[in-house]
Amino acid sequence: MTGPWAEWDHVLKVDPDKELHDDETFEDVAATGTDALEIGGTMDVTSEKMQRVVDACAAHDVPIYQEPSNPGVVIDHEALDGYLVPTVLNAGDPFWITGAHKEWARIDDDLDWENTHTEAYIVLNPDASVATYTEADCDLTAEEVASYAGVAERMFGQEIVYLEYSGTYGDSETVAAASEAVDDATLFYGGGIHGYESANEMGQYADTVVVGDLLHDEGVDAVAETVAGAKDA
Ligand SMILES: CC(C)=CCC/C(C)=C/CC/C(C)=C/CC/C(C)=C/COP(=O)(O)OP(=O)(O)O
Ligand SMILES: O=P(O)(O)OC[C@@H](O)CO
Ligand SMILES: [Mg+2]
Image (cartoon, rainbow, N blue to C red; front, side, top):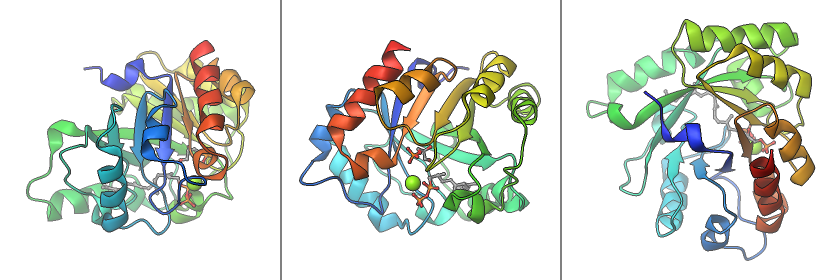
């Protein structure tokens, strides 16, 4: 099975705990040309904030996926195309590998399995809140990251492998090594993308470039530059 992400060059991650830049709207967000919106963040996300953002995105013609950081923020919304649920391969606490997922399956008796997909995260910026939250071991060589990526695809059947440098620009040699290690899986790269050049560079190795903070900090014109960079790669 191959999902729609196989066609994505660019994903825009909207943090429900952060405001859009200036007076920008979700119509402006949709007009950036991104291939999909992922709604999620690590800290201070609630189901109410999730609901508000999905409501605001619903009228626009871009696929919308929720990326929950814990089972308590998952919402059911007709505008959602599905759920992209992280599993953190290098988490220090197994709760973030399979434990939260087990709890979700236990408490949700109407889980939408058909539209639920996993993202095999490898968290690589030790200063990001996601690294602290999951107690991730970020002290990995490029070879180890590539090995995790291969294991994700070959042993655990993961369709999305996500190199997560949230908040900082990553090491392109590491991304290149991970890219070599996967065959059919879609490689996501996220972290510190801030313009055409950085999106274009990481887009040479990753299948899909994820942009987050730039939307909230600089706005849609800057994001549109990253869409161009990812698409030209
Ligand atoms: C089983 C369910 C439904 C949920 C658990 C899913 C897991 C394992 C989550 C752990 C990893 C995680 C917190 C992912 C959230 C997505 C993410 C990394 C967002 C970016 O966060 P940051 O940019 O680091 O955080 P802030 O911007 O909020 O500081
Ligand atoms: O916020 P940035 O650094 O762009 O990172 C994007 C995304 O990978 C965060 O989960
Ligand atoms: Mg962030």
